[in-house]
Image: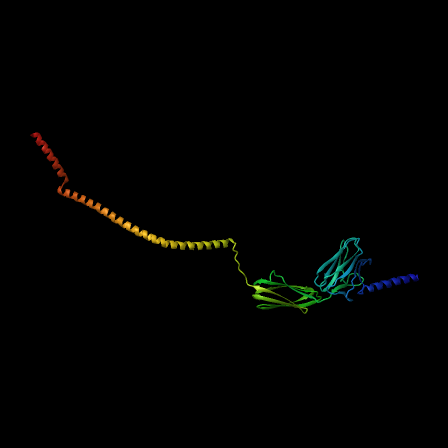
Length: 356
């Protein structure tokens, strides 16, 4: 009985030593277990020794910027389902899937690299009814409490122009994306816009405000010309520049209206040319017409004179005839008496001959 008690005590002591060793930088072994049965479900082991390990709530596992490290994930319930292993940024929620374990697959190693400065956590998402474990969750049933991974290095300030071109037409907005990467906490961000007119903006980023600021700057408040933007946060300054240009009015020469306009212009020019030609030709024609008119005038004049002469001659003839008739009429005052007298003379002669 005594030996049994001693053996149990030694096992408890060994377990305590193991759990204590899990909190050391050289042996970080995190276990997620079932609350009821106390049996392990998942296990995450950091195979690469970190730069430092800081205890607290949460405990912090520190790696240098630009380095890579390995972890080993074990699914003790692999006969029931698989898991997906993710890295999630504590600050901005950026997710990266680093791999998965299929159903029946118990253990796998993963290499993690290219993490920007900031705080990260490993999240194991179970499938087919298996639970999800966030290693930063202090309320989760684990052997060593909550943990986060810290990538050292200064937080990064990103300033980007989201317009399709750096030449922005006056009246449009300059769209800026301002992002603070790797920030744990909050920081004040100030923006100075330097153009024809100076503008100033500020905002607190981090925490509930998020780490991204989409800033729209009306260009009519800046003025036409080159504009420089300076963004300051966490002692870091980011800059960019763009141009505010005037509105350009362009005419589509291939449009029907333009074609009609060109046709009208050509027609007008052609008409002007034709008119000019007509004027020149009309000057020549005028001379010809004048010549013709002169000739025709002379012809008409001659014709008039001839016709007048003819009429005069005819009139003269008529006059002579009239004169003869007049003279005849004047000789025999009554045309009937002359005729009767002649007939009477003839009858008288004939009668006298018969008598004789």
